[in-house]
Length: 217
Image 1 (cartoon, rainbow, N blue to C red):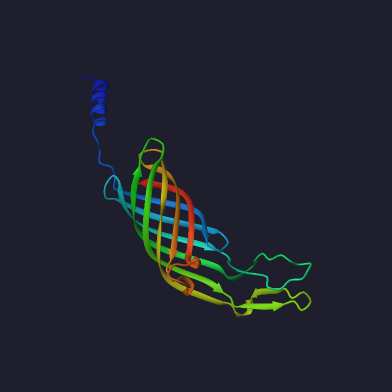
Image 2: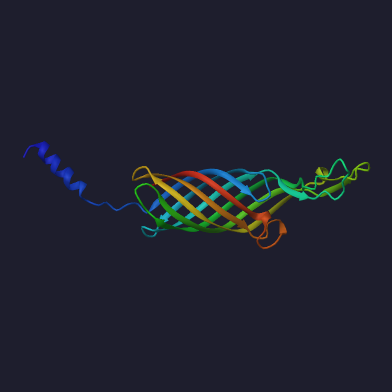
């Protein structure tokens, strides 16, 4: 048997063997974070996955997010005949937000086909949340009676909180090859008692849309 025939037989035998796929993978992503009543910001994350089965994964995730203002809305109480806009005015009571989060979670495969795979993530963890907080000052224009509310910049205070965070959302994956996949993720998360507000509040709730890659190792 010459070398060419022998090599062909070996190649065909190897092609029929199903090698076990790695249970470990890593992810990286970047996206837009949109806290309620706030300006949008940027978010970056890294994640390690472990496949329990073909449809269930466990993961650990760390993310870093930044955004600017948390807005405060108030109504015009006083007006003149020339200024009858009753719409709300906007100012801000906090800015320079920084959020570092550490999550553990589970990912469930809901649907699979040759084009797009659909997953759903559930995660919980701890977040280090910091921001500048401002007292508000009210000024009334003596001529028009119009009320203006401003943040008092001279008395800003840096708040630092460690909060329990819960999140969930779908993930759409497109496989490129056996090792690499691309995905788009959309999640809603909330930080419990953020800013000493209610258990679940607008202050601590945000949505995150991100895109990234998964690499099997």
